[in-house]
Length: 123
Image 1 (cartoon, rainbow, N blue to C red):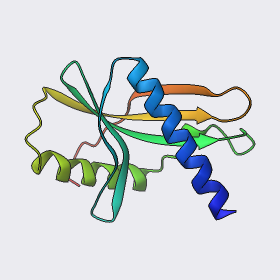
Image 2: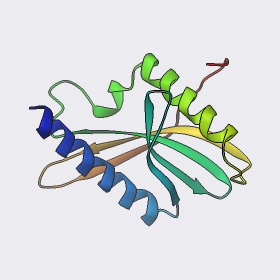
Image 3: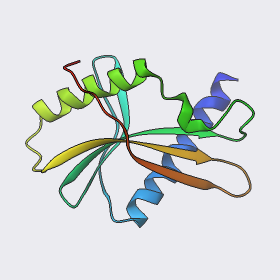
Image 4: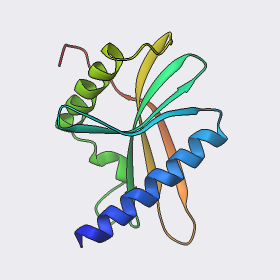
C-alpha cells in the first residue's frame, strides 16, 4: 500500500510539473527538503516565486485531493519556504503558496489553485 502511494505521488508530481511548464513556469526545485519538511515543486513565473504542494488521487471517495492540505502541512511548507528564501539569492518580487490537485486514471486532470493558503505570522 505505501509503495503504491509513493508511485502515485511521484506520478502526480510529474503531471503537475508538466502542467506548470506548459503554462510558462520555470521549475527551480523538485522535492526541496529542509526542517524535516518538503516542498514538492518550487517554480518561478513573471517574477513570482511559487511554492507548490501537489496532491494526487485516483478517486474522490475521500474527497478532492486539494482538501488534504492540513493547517499543519501548510505551516510546515511555510517553514521550509522561509528557509529557502533566506538561503538563496533568487531574484523575485513576490511569492505565494499554491496547491496542485491531480486526478489520476485513464484521463489525468490537473487543477491548479493559486494562492491556496496564506501564512499570516512567523512560523
